[in-house]
Image (cartoon, rainbow, N blue to C red; front, side):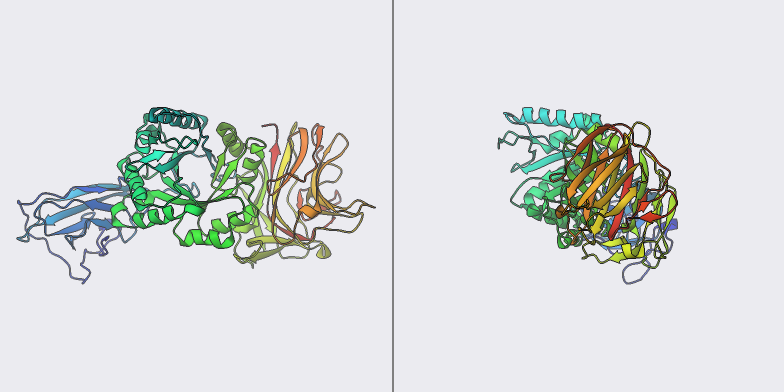
Length: 594
């Protein structure tokens, strides 16, 4: 097991080396009869408690070790791993270990130097690679979904097909390289042929590829085996360990993935990684559990964290997608959204880019990356990141990272509520009440010339039917111009609709969905888009099944009122059509053809 002695780290932490009994150890005479242990470790550590391992020379009866030239500490012969138990500062640190012979003398030192460099920023990833990053400096890494290929007759064909697909993803700008893995008995194989053929390529051969080795993409390795097998998981970790110079190292982590139904693979990997045997891999192999559409629950997301997983992955049309994202983020988990399709892929990348850590796409990788990085932000409000219920303002952003202040809790302003982790709307959200005429004006966020807008919001409706002939604005900038998302019940018509309208060519053009498609029991992820030439569209939880789309052409007519949450703004500074419900997140982007 890993050593649990308090050892000196020289000037890094100060103090003398002591045994666990507290006695300071003195130097013993050198021995010429025993070799130096062979030491391995982390050449560069992106965390503050690196590990080292060493061999057992012939004739050794015990060891002593130290860090950064401090006093020596004795360890027994059975201990061949040491993990720093106090934080090391940034910089180079030297680990030494000597073997003791039967006469009590010590041989020469085996040494290893580790550079501790703890990266600031970069969100959840903290990798060497400059990943796809939004205008608000949020990293949303792009991965290409595996495309299976039929009719591969030999392992060589499978390897060629895998490398070709992998190289294409690298060239297109993918941040993550996705590979599917199966158990090959004596090897870990790439599952690239969905016909069930056994002529698969070995993972080790793929990892030996020069272009992949020289790249900086993070490996996304999905375990496809349906039967859990510790020998298989052990072989997988051994293959990764054999390639540790290029992968599973500081600045280039590896993510092991498995669907929830076969998560036992992840549990086995967690147990092995927590053992001394894989101490040098432990910090650099992350575990991720995938959920089929609508399979995720609050309990399962919480269990992912308690089971020692690092990421959850959600199908892009998952109901309560953003509720699960917020819950996972609060637990310190990364989040990936999969598999964004070709059709309207740009919309589903754009509406998720500020909230998730990765996006797996069938949509072209280069295009997806361009959508993430597009400098088209107009505003972004995310109350889910606020934890202090007593605050009087929350931050929001215009087109850059300069924080603005939004008033909450006062007369006419939204209320800030912090939902419990089991609530339908978890953590921070803004509550609007029409009876109290609550509204949250932002600023005059105009559409750009020749383009439209994309609006996305996480909203929980307090009611989905309103009085005949009335309107209730969710988010709007619609004083004879611009755009609006609102509940509307036409005079004389029996049904309420949710509609998104843009003012083009002298009038509003609306996409609509029956309010019967909405519920008050959970939050909806509503996305609206018009790119200046084509459909005025809307998606409820990334689904447009019940939506009526209209088409138009032309610029949105801008006006001089502020985009406003919870009401419709007027030129005289007043508001109307006040909303009953809660808004957790709202973003708007200038939106042109993609």
